[in-house]
Image (cartoon, rainbow, N blue to C red; front, side, top):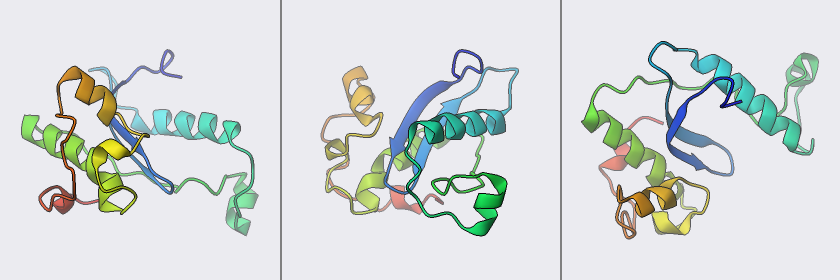
Length: 135
């Protein structure tokens, strides 16, 4: 899907009931909706059908693992980019899944530590300033 509809993953975290990401589309492309539809479709096909689905989802042929909408935000500047990257990576701590960001394996945090963007011990506990961004 990324080859047909390219984008760059800057930050991503997958949690048990939701995910957050910071992605960048090519300069002449603003079709986030297409990418999310394809990501959800490909992921859903790979997962066994075990979740409960209400009548509306059954009628539409939808899986029960995704919310119908997503929140899109255009990054304004470097400070906004850093704030959203921090928010993505602090989420497992914020939701009480781990005590340290480094303990959550389903995240780009580990790759970003290797590249030098974050120190390995960044956000050993919940930082209040990061929790102020809207979910």
